[in-house]
Image (tube, rainbow, N blue to C red; front, top):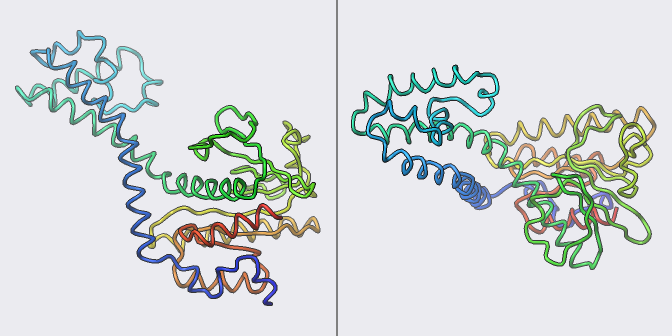
Length: 322
């Protein structure tokens, strides 16, 4: 039993997995700062809108300024997606509604009213990005830790860009590349490993956050020739939950635990047993006990609290040495 727990030496009890109040608070502050960075383009656009509109004397004259049309449509409450389904006449009608119902009643303050309504619509867009932000930041933190372990061990690696899908060699200055990665390749002791993020595993028929396979980048072909269809290639599969809210912690674990159990059952049917692991930012007492119990029994091969640098480094080292 003790041997099974050597996977993460910084976890000796369930309490070690629990996210502290200090880490939760620090995480929320970091999340708030990131939201503010995301808001910068919207704030700057609103400033530009106010400046461009300041020369307009009457709300109705806004219709004649083509360079303000997109801003007016946004202030009307129309999202970018909705514009694809509207004709130019429909768009003009929306702008006229904005002017008649909101800008004209505002009197001399119609420009401020225009800017406020522009920001309201952009706030929805920001909210959409922010809803996924905790998960994105969680992935970035995990990748940054993994890259750090690579660098300290002197291990060369290749990384796959999340925009073009191109595989690139390790950069001399890798600042910020964790924002652009969705795959890694490394070789250690003549063993090739691929880490692929957020892909649908054919045998599981569901998306898996982190998949580690034995292979090289060229094995990731299109269609059924890809290594992801080779059940013998899977070394380990894991779930990563970056959500910070303690109130949602149990739900994140239930989702991850169900996914991990589905992975195990799918592979057992094929008489295979890849390792499974879990990394989470918000871990409360009840789920910590369950995670620790699974680690002791060997049902879960490894786990780490994303907010604990020692645990995160340990699981990254474990991944690199699989």
